[in-house]
Length: 127
Image: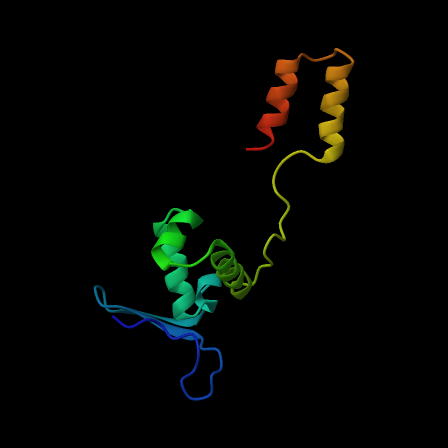
């Protein structure tokens, strides 16, 4: 089976899929279909993502598989993220703001909550 090209082989322009056909029921659907963020990746980048998934996101395993250093793998991962239309590290990690963290510590300091409660509150937001 052929992979859907994302670039025109003649001019290099972006290709839009306009027809889908089902061999089972002989149905044809026509329209404009987007490929999503993964369609923006080249063959090497897709292979990198596949390896990343196969290694369960563990960069140390990828280092062994590819024979590359941690910084090189991180750079390639950031290239993939950018190619998909995102900015690496652009999203804020889920968790407490500094003000919320300070509030929990003040509550602990003033004896309104126990150390165990403070630990639970601080750890819950890190997950």
